[in-house]
Length: 189
Image 1 (cartoon, rainbow, N blue to C red):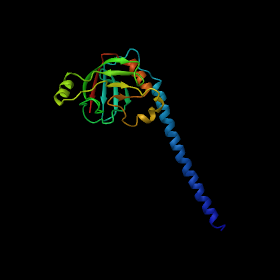
Image 2 (tube, helix red, strand yellow):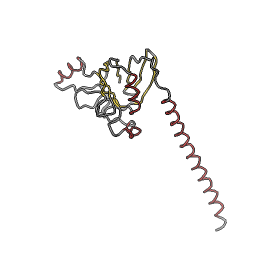
Image 3 (cartoon, one colour):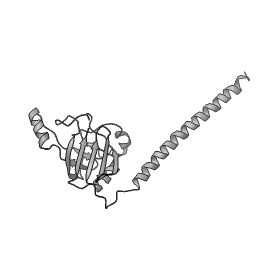
């Protein structure tokens, strides 16, 4: 029996070493991600930068703030529960596709701050009328639902809105400060 103990001990040592290396890799990866997040947050958008367009790529789950042709900031977004295709009617949980205007800001939103997208436009209304449906509305860029900002790390991994474009609360604060009412927004599939 003493013959088997050294081998078992060597296996246990190798197992502990493998676990230790795995934990070190996980911790260092998490630390790098945290530092990257902190570094990005320390560089606010300069006051002299004019955001003249917001670009949303639904398939990439990406919102970008543009100044001319320069991408100033990129955010990961969550969309509606049925994100593929153009919004057709109220309740379809889709985000519209096309060119719109960010036409007002809402500081008293059911989510952490919001900027309204000018959907439905005339073409959207005509299409809905031809289908005999209500086109819907109240499509916004917004933060997390009030009281749930601490869950953004989880919420932003899935589509959860009713057709809006969601970011974290900190990101929404940055977007609200950088984007003026009247800015164009282009949303593509």
